[in-house]
Image (cartoon, rainbow, N blue to C red; front, top):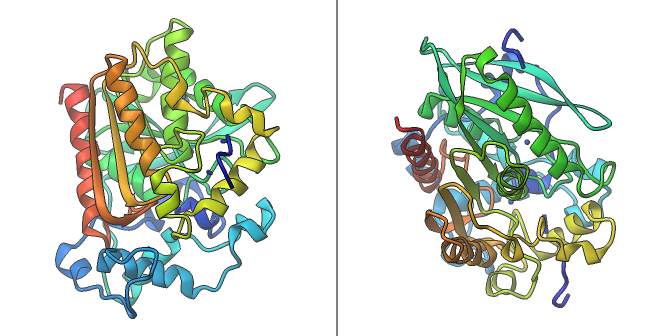
Length: 377
């Protein structure tokens, strides 16, 4: 998403870096989306993954499975994101590609999620956006709903790149997941993604019953840029005096405007997300650098009072770690019920890699447990 002190920053008949390196393969049809996503971790096999070389200088304590993913990602030889246009960057390989290739090479089977998927177009100002709806096949009369926003710095990635997260959340939480393909920059500048995110949330509230959803139990979840969108959606719901989400889960969210934090310094050259990439994301999404001061980007400066129970997930090898942790403290100071956990030895985009990274599976199940608790399940 993200130099010195720079500010940036359906009726059911029918959107860190997985994203931080591109969008990978062309989007698959919604009816087959579940077939292109990694399985939850087979712990025995994932633990057998070994990196080929020494730990990189920028992450001496990286976990071996995480390092194996990064090594595979680097092996594709893609040009660095900051050297590309947005259109070119969207064609780069992603950490999701790396995970899936490692699974094939190590005979780690995919999981069959007990979920059906279907596409739906949602009207927004100036057009429409696509959403993929993940529907549990457990046959209940009504399900809680999760509105999910993918990562990618507001510039790259798509629903497929983050399909593993959506599948896991739907399957393990036993909830409908509406994954939102908000419009991307630079074609659509700030605050388009933010407006699309809120429009999708309002659409879900209005149409939940038609897809067997409980309109009184709607949570928002997002990763990286999507984590920012999830929190912003809750803030705008509060300010618009409509139902605020039941809960928020923000995974390593874009939450600050300071690129001189401890984690930015420590992880300036990290992969798959580093400081030059964050600068590139900011320049592509914002109309001008002064917009970095906007509390929609700089959440640490936002009015956070009255938000629902919020879960924040951070990770060690990530420029965004410091601002994620600062956001936790700001939420607590605003009287919000907060739960947070940090995972050491893993990088930005580790969430959703439960197929091969044990810490990712832990984080995924932590998010699931937090959502189930909020839903009263």
